[in-house]
Image (tube, rainbow, N blue to C red; front, top):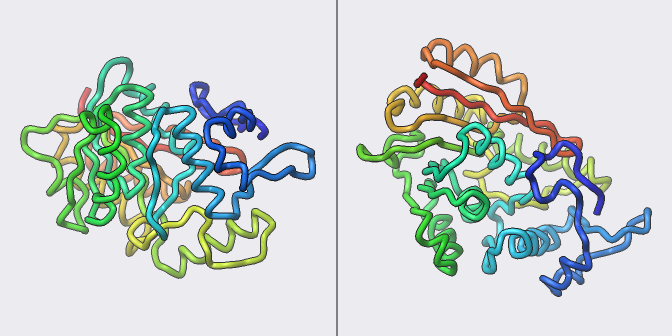
Length: 289
């Protein structure tokens, strides 16, 4: 598979893959490998089964996660792209062991897995979906290192971000979040159709990376979600040093920047991310010097 320009320099996936190596690690991947028009072996990313097995293989080969799966209809995260959030966060935090809060960890628990395996961080991982947390518990329960490093917490207040999951005695180097980007089920469906069209496939409403409603959309989309996060973050300025989140729509940044100025943050950053044709960014802010 060809190299992925734009990925972080420490991202283990930026130079493509040796499929012979991957097939030795996961023989079950063979059923989903084909030879593309350039004569190279590849994966059909429009096939949700292929996507899941491929990500299982990457987690096993590069991060030593032997037992990972996601339930049907839950988000199956692309591992290379998720790693590309973890590495810039490490640049922001500097060297050393860190305790990180993951907002909306999902059934896949991907950010804690990568943060523990790559940098030895510890995590508190939260979600509003009890079933997702039960599944995440199965994943981390099969690995002693993950079990020691990751704590799962249920968020009982769907309209809050930090309240209900950050305790009085907590102290975090950072929070991270991959928010629901869409404002409605209809918007999520439109996004799916655009993705399929970009893959050159017939239009369908099936998601090749899956995703439940709470993972894909919320009223007001990422604009409303991150706006709530910025406003609520000031209440937790003494317990979280850096607040961070992915931002999908560049057009939303001016709104967030105005909110950050109103909240009197001491520093804020926009960290650009490029994963092939996809453009995204991390928004980070702190109330401390």
